[in-house]
Image: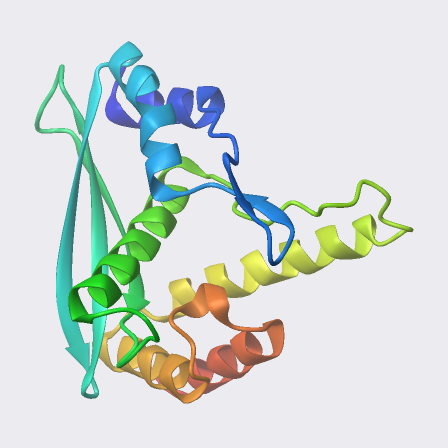
Length: 197
């Protein structure tokens, strides 16, 4: 199998349960560590290995952690797939020193890079099983949200457009596109459409 066939098998087989619980928001979630633990046996089964690297990049005087996931086919080491995600470092965060802020941003970026590579849905679980008819609206909203991010990523194909995305994320005081509301994503998309090329 080539690396793309193997990745597809991993995406289908991977089960990364939400092993953490946020008592304040009353929802379950998965951490970067949860995903990595679930990945190890599946990667071994399909003879793949994973490398993760972080780079700190500066955009308009703000620091972002760029996490890059590198998937390698151990049977054909020249076959590699990479994906990245960004998380902005907060200038200050109560109760955290500088290294903790960077570490939290790194963990966030890594988690979303892993989600992108392995098609992991990261929506939060509701504490209530009775949705009172809201489940269909929620699914529509999630689909619209994912579509908007995909459209922005497809359009941000130049350095100028990428800079515009960073500018707007900062303007909205968010860490990444994933933190934006659907209205904010639409604004980002419309601004990118104004830039030619």
